[in-house]
Length: 223
Image (tube, rainbow, N blue to C red; front, side):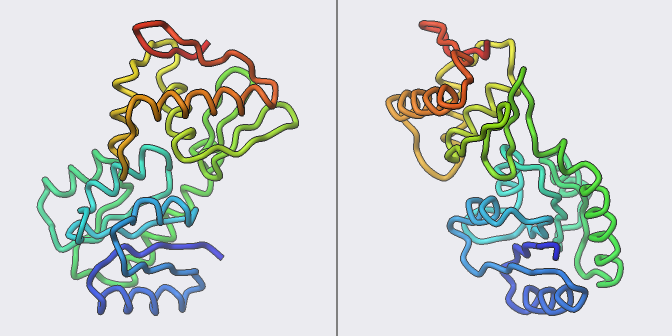
């Protein structure tokens, strides 16, 4: 059963969508609290997210941007904001589709099915980053090397994925802290050091040694 998260603060719309999509065999999660919504979405490991823009606490643009830092889960923005600017901004932040309210439920259903089908064909490659002989699986926060694997914390995944995505470049401590700061909690300089140390130790435990090199006064680079 494929899981869909409905991020919608309008109770009537949320419940109607939940009932409608459940009838078609989808497992639906429809949170009613939005303070830690990004963490909630990432922990659910869903197959698709229906995301409104006008939300309490954080708007849909912020949520979409945060999700895209560590996940390629398909996102359909479903909103009453129907300007071309809203659609363009949504797509630029990583949304896969844009549907305006009021919408035809059957058309929305068809778009969901089409996007799930497309993402299913590419889910493995979208959720896995490869560097040399090891892989970082973003969907379950694990590193796989030979026949071994190890689980990472949220911060460790953010750090390692950022370094892999910038392989060959020196990444400053300031950039890494900003990358972590843009989540939902503060990360200071000493916390970054602790996270780097723990990440190196975990990688070393499964045989990935000295892959993160410190460039004194400059930052870090993948070796």
